[in-house]
Length: 112
Length: 116
Figure 1 (cartoon, each protein chain N blue to C red):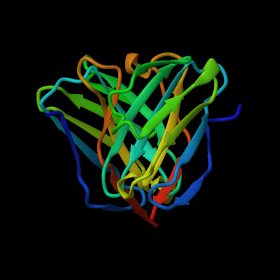
Figure 2: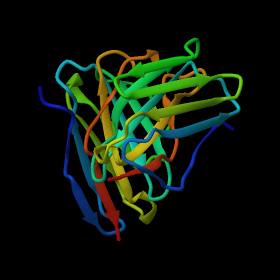
Figure 3: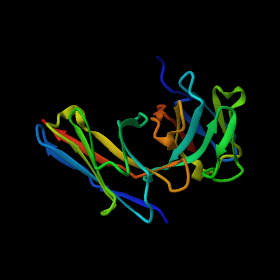
Figure 4: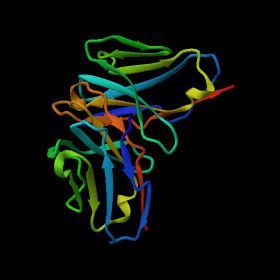
């Protein structure tokens, strides 16, 4: 069955460093992959979408890569700030459907 | 512009009772989605409306769940009768075009449901 894995352990990094989060998937080839940010008590907020034919996408301090051979996406936040502390979710379009499958998310904490 | 709103923000009910959750999408968004997150698990798709029609309801757990979107504006999700395993956070999202075609979907804050 289609499965998405994100590191369930929290990631702690020092302010100013680059945070790298991983999203691995198995048993399918998604056409789209999205990254979301979720703060406690709130709904997910869309950050970036990358298509299967795109290797990399950037938006300000954010960068997403998509390696369909490795079945992996990496999400980078450069020059991280304490305000970047949140849970980050990846979501992939389920094959043959219009619905997204979400990972469980990785909690990021940026230490001042 | 107002975002997606959900009501209530929290609901605590007893097993066997009925609860109705409401979602107001962003104005003009034809596509509306319901998701659920059970504690410790990932957000899971429940169903997708295009205007007032159910496009995909493959994620609905069972027939105790009924979703409606009369008039193609707001949507309700009714759970009747509620069971303990229905506890979780119910999210609604909306998008102008179909999210599965690359359109951004905007999430509401969620309704936290606790069934005792």
